[in-house]
Length: 88
Image 1 (cartoon, one colour):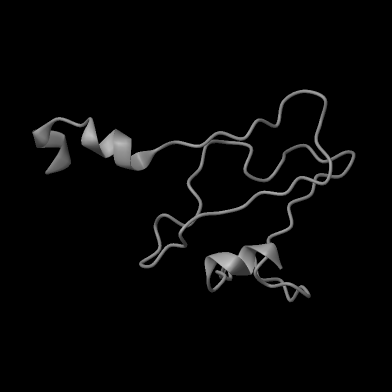
Image 2 (cartoon, one colour; image 1 turned 30 degrees about the vertical axis):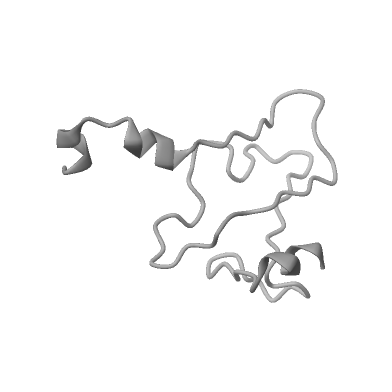
């Protein structure tokens, strides 16, 4: 598996559903579903004591529009805070 070149793989405690590959999280949206997982802005695993280094996304099927994936550099966001906000 390509991802193992980066080191030990993270097994998400909330998405380990007894799959054959517990280090992979499968997100699906079936016809008739009213919402998509992760549709709102969120931060994956950053609240954990030892969060993983990163994530790799692999899309099997994507919609013609919408479903954008966005990343935010939180190191840069912190560096641009005022000194007071950094110590808040």
